[in-house]
Image (tube, rainbow, N blue to C red):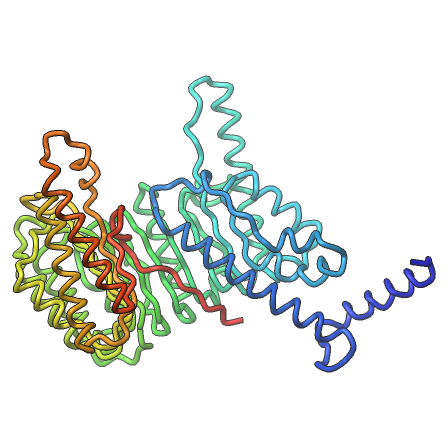
Length: 472
């Protein structure tokens, strides 16, 4: 291309891009810019959904072991034109899984302060390795951690207008010099937040008090809350506040001491409160009074739910019949439930009558069903496999009768000891093979009915899958 024509083309492109923020549809170049922006926004949403789902898939996996590639990085390197259009999407979703990445981000934000306003979602998920034993190496490692922590707080102070904040509390330790030992986030980060995920591994009560303070400041606008806290509700409630706009709640505490948390999140009886449609309660140990109180709250809220996951660790003193009867009652009260997941641990196998009652209570609106039972009491792996296949067949019978017209997916979680049993040479393989044939027959029957049935090789996830709708 001749130099004059090349210069004229570059000038025209620059003018088009400079006007792209308020371009009017129909003008020259507008369609191309708007189309690229639409594609890049979709790519950004997809990247966010995949990353957050993986971050929350297994809280025991270290973030430093995970690597994801943001597709927009490659898009921005195509040419100057694409780079200009991707600029406001490239930093829209920021995921830090290595301490070194925090320093790179800080350098970029200092070089171009306008980038901070484009950050819509910010996730921290990394853990430090152990402190070296040699004094000089230990001192260097501690200094590096304090330096990284200082960079983290500096970045957090630059952020405004966040939609989603996702933090593993290991990533905020240690606090930089001159700051309280509690992880106090700047108010400009917390105010206006609509989504928070907290994965807590901090050993001290003071830190948990700070996390509840996060929720208190964000409570007026908070729509999604996800907590994996290794403590009881009482430790988390000290400064928490009512969340009257909450629509999605996913919680997992180590034990229960009160139901006050559900009053704050779901609203007390008769209180003006948003409709929580998405509820996920992870497995933990319950006392019988705590379990009854939880079921009472769920019965009140059942007609509003679209998605529900319920995880329960069975205490030897808890009557299994109470649980199965309560679950059946809750299902009968649902009117628009689309996704139901039940994960039990250390539970006795359901009797045929209990299985039938739960299956018969499934609402006609259901599209996805998940059952999981691990560390079954009086466990026999072959028996549990048979029971799960029979329960799946009961569900398919209802599908065939037209009573579950929308059901398209069934997942049966594996007992975590099944692989161990499969490797046991003393176990009789004939019965195992018979169960495998039964599972294949049930799966084939499901396929004919248009239902995707999978007998999983791993345990059922103890939470609902993440889904994300950006308000911007």
